[in-house]
Image 1 (cartoon, rainbow, N blue to C red):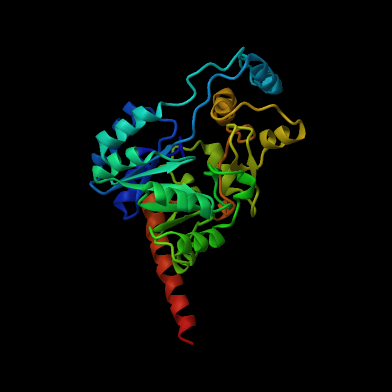
Image 2: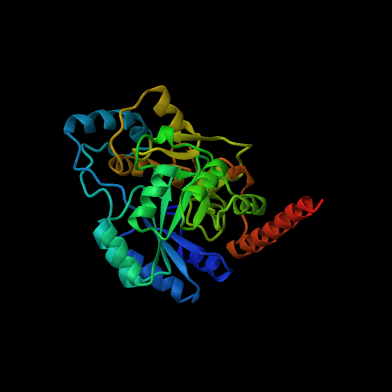
Length: 341
């Protein structure tokens, strides 16, 4: 949810009893501090800061850049945007500076996606009383992260929207569904497990709790809330899905991510576009994504969504939390009734 989490959304979720989370992958250290202060002005409830730990590459060669830019040149022209000659750095905020901001802000929780932190860094953050959660897409990753010192593991199933968290091996071989992955990870590690991927309502939450998860992480469900910073075109693309209309694509950012299938994702496959590495590709496509969203269209926009996005409800965040709690209780009661027969 990087780019869609606002102080209004995080504060509303936390104040209602959930753990509001900032997707700060693309937010600089000063912005992180300002966002935290804004939430604390609204509520004294805990919140989470989420960061990407993927390594940032050096600037790609001119040959690589020319091929990737050429693939998108017709789309730049279509939107009357200047065609870039190159994609210069910087490509992402410095992780070291972001981690300093985490230490300054001292949120209740910090979660890591797309990689790992060193044991020394983890120990420093944990020493400040901050709980660390790390995303795993396989049992192998979960065991590795537990060994580094993570307080809990986020088991990201293949249904999840946004970027795959895979950092060990091929992502294509780490697409296990949420239910199967959660149960395997629960059996493989001793730390608590949080389930993520395709969970949109109380029935889904109850299901992963029954499998041994101690919590559920929902992203797509909150993208459509009025407090979300997602463009209207993104919200509309999710709400109007009829079943699963998502696809895995590297075209927007250079890393595999799940979003609503559109003209951009289909064109990348059909024309076999040359892509730059993550997050260089994300910087290249940013003007196109912004232009598409400004025009009210999701056809060239990275409308990240999980496979169950069609179940999304565009409700205020606090109301959605209330309903999720009620649905979860009802689902657990039904399970108890079935077990008692």
